[in-house]
Length: 449
Image (cartoon, rainbow, N blue to C red; front, side, top):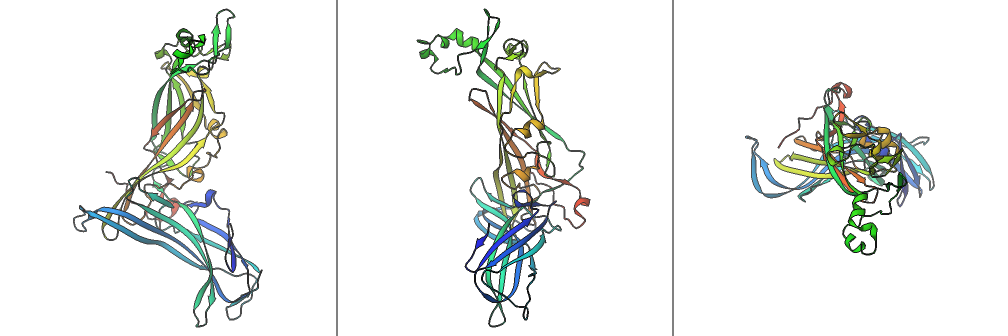
């Protein structure tokens, strides 16, 4: 969006920019055009400057100090830490096209427009942190890591010194995180969560007289008020309710790699399957009249998948240049994925060798019924950048990050159930040093508490 200043209108166009203007270690080059429109006559402009920089701000309470000789943590009284660090700064004089200068000075008329192309690159010879505004869960402070394109129009002063005539800042997001590992040897983590779906009502019940399924007139069991309702409505008498309601065991299994590759499609790296141990709860099979008759479902086993919420749990410890130890922990909501018309019915499940009935959600089912393009890597559709284990806020910085997921399922009657998975999966770009070049400095190993 253009910035309308007193004297100049700034508009920065990023060319072939990634989603969310979020650059990364595999997409580090920023190409763009600075569009300028002057709103008044101006003389003696001597340069248009681009400053590309990265900075860190730390405001934290420290309770420990590192002894420089013994490297042992020393308990101290609460000490306020206010620090600012420069990660890098790149200065670039932009070329002013189709404009003649007089003694390296330019004049512009009111209403005149110019376009200045530029190209800058995130430094690849050091490990940079992801763009983040990290507020500690325990309210001990916060950390801000950010990157900016600063544009300045410099004007020659009366004493041969340049003064800033107009300026504009455009923030740029950066996704860090490189895991040096063997790409063909990534462990798959599996998690299981079982919930008993009680008082599930059939929408169709078997009628002995017609030998067919007929609609069930009860949509809600109203268990808290059924004793009162049965005084005038026979449907809520115990025997009638018992015939229509069942308890359904429903297990969700979630599989994810130990390292989630940020170069690769998110949905192709996860696996979600639904299973039900029907035999243990008195059902003969999923082909009985409890679930279907002549190909028609009773809807007893019908469920809808509503949403998948992804969170990042991050911990790091930072040692400042004064030897103060800062401990940070935070939780970020990365994405809330809503699904539309993504449903399943136990009557369609397949029996496995253990007698369970199972259904696998394919990546096509997940991606075709959602409001986000989850075929992209996670960092390209998430609402936030991801703090990765090797994000380096300072030279002495060690962190861990894990992903957690919450899958919400509706029972078809408006009641929802949350399946939670606190995983040990950590995000990163799966790469080796050869991919980034020999100048790239690998981060230290993750710390363990």
